[in-house]
Image 1: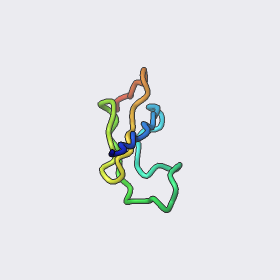
Image 2: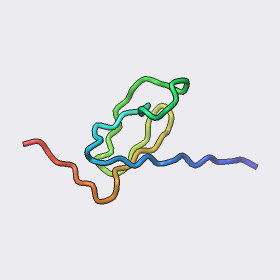
Image 3: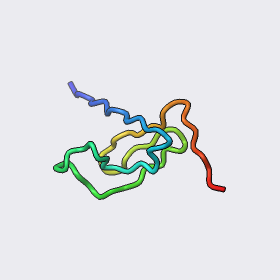
Image 4: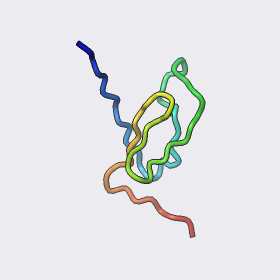
Length: 65
């Protein structure tokens, strides 16, 4: 029997962009190189640890003018 661990999804607000992993709430012992996560299309995973980041529902990303 194999146990599949479901990774938690970290919901982020538009005001928290840019999103990076490892995030400030992660333990230092589990650190990996910082990588920026593109959540502008809804959801993305960290290529190092697999943590899922998702833009909160209803959030609007404001563009640059």
